[in-house]
Length: 469
Ligand code: ASP
Image 1 (cartoon, rainbow, N blue to C red):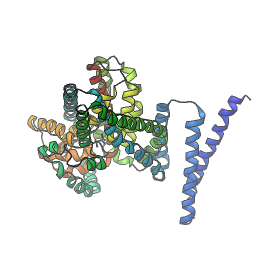
Image 2: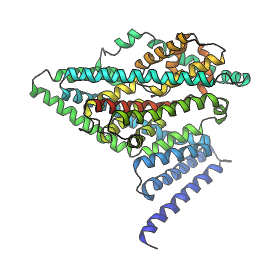
Image 3: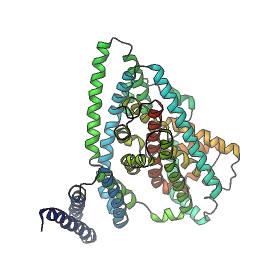
Image 4: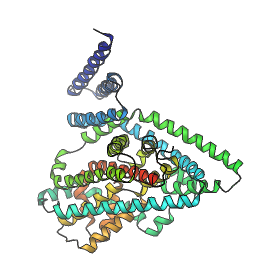
């Protein structure tokens, strides 16, 4: 046997053995004391990790995004097969999320400060800012409209039987109260705008308030162009170096993405009740169909408005999409989105560092579409008719609501509270959709991140700066 085939076969044997052990450890759960069971848990998870390690690192020199996709698939399979026991490996996923979240604040602050200072031109900044906002808001409004049209045409709420309805209300109405009480502080649009100015920038950095950080970083960046060059250079080169360190850290962390993604998906799928999915199948499928439709619009827009080809965009954005799908957080995905846009699509730092963090906070097309479908769905279940005025109110409210809330897991449902309240749809109706909230969050976050990336590419191309890194 050649050395090459030996190198291939031994990992296959060891990883199959590890998987077999995992399975055996999983089925022999009876008659163990608490302590023995804990040891068994550690052992079987070790087997799983060995299996994954050999698969990802030894079997074939796969590209990172292929590994992440395999991890996504295997995670879902493992979640279905081993169900609740997959919650044991969730900490690996949580560690991965925390690692990339760790980079967000220093990366955004340093890169935006350097980007603005090197732009050196307030006019240009204003132009890019205006363009970005217009693209973001228009696309968000378009996304809700698609959601509203789908829900009006296919009426997902009209087929829900009364006993399913009663069961959903009974199971989830307890959780609605906390969601509603979380939202009151964001209700006033003027406050949302005022809140962009941090009264204490250190607090803003400490609490990771992205809009406030963006505001402060831009202000400092602009002011650096107004003080003597020699002094400014000191500050800029310091933050430039910090930026480089953060980017390097992203490279390191992203290498463990396949493990994080596997753990996150396996634990979500493992803890997810499939029966709930079936009872809301029409609503869930309709939302996902709408999101898939949006998904195809982005490469199309990119192909039409920039030199980047359809397929290149679809393939290049995959690492950010898979991280978004498994973390359900556009803010946590931000370092990966910035990396992809700069390295793969050639968006220059000064545009990526501004457009993308802004997008992670205010641009949520997937969430917007979800709100359109959900608002109409709940109204239909309650037998309410939504006229054109109510539907337009939904478009406006959902677009504005997206500005004040950063992309984090479950934020969409909080924004939905604002929308429902505005058009007088009973808030308890949220209980109907809470059961499938997490799975839809994964899909809509993927779209949110894709949209941010696509618009950053379009803005860079419109400035004639794509590929000028
Ligand atoms: N999780 C979404 C995001 O981070 C927001 C949401 O729809 O809940 O973009």
